[in-house]
Length: 152
Image (cartoon, rainbow, N blue to C red; front, top):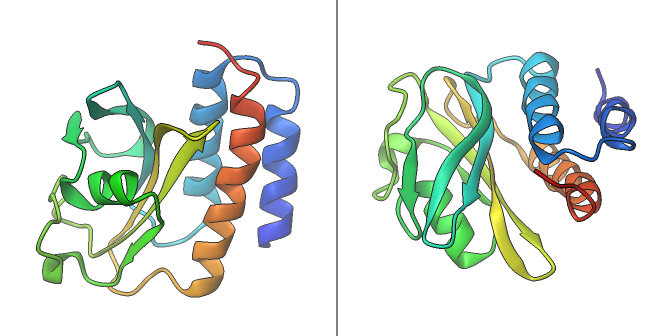
């Protein structure tokens, strides 16, 4: 599936969906089924203090991540996408799945307030090139549009 096709599929899945859990669940499933060499994809949601695991696809996850800790906590705190080519070389990495070798995290802000992060892990070093990172950022922008209208 090409990037534009995935975005169009996601749009069709969420355009009439008012529930954020359904949106995030289908979003994580779509990424997992659309890309090779992804061992974990999901969302950590900001609870006012920490990032708490939300809908995901993959092995059991770390349930709570403080802001600034791990790649997820860093991306949320710095308000920028972080792509780590080799997580074992990243000083602040939290190893939830020993199979993960590289990671991409895109922060999600709704109306300038932290909502959470999209976290994608791969068992391959340097899995995430500039094109896929840009895709993940566009994917999050699409989610933000619908999440601003959604409810729990």
